[in-house]
Image (tube, rainbow, N blue to C red; front, top):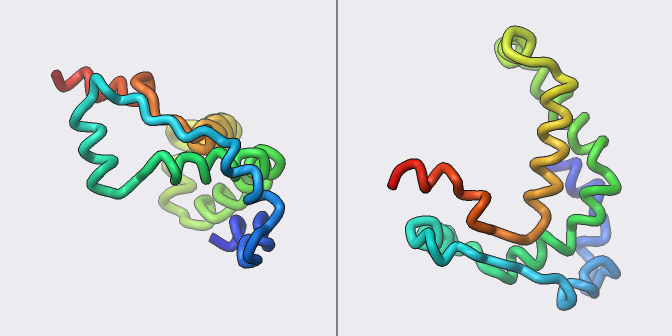
Length: 123
């Protein structure tokens, strides 16, 4: 969590500049064909407003994506069993590329049908 606090030190101010464009961000939930996924979102309380916030953070995430990914994996490889698992099944470079993409997508502020392909496998 300290990485995120470092990226957004102004988050504790009343109206930081990066928050001012939240109203222009779009939070989209498009899961009409997936009532189970929609119910899960309701259960955890994830709203379109939350997705707007994620979208508002996205430019900062993109600016600092390498720092975020490096901080994550530097902690992971400190644990010998996880380091070994990575070395035996993948490479750090591959995992870093994947995590970069996932984080950027996470901060898109959209939940779409395509993100829930696994649910259709259970139908």
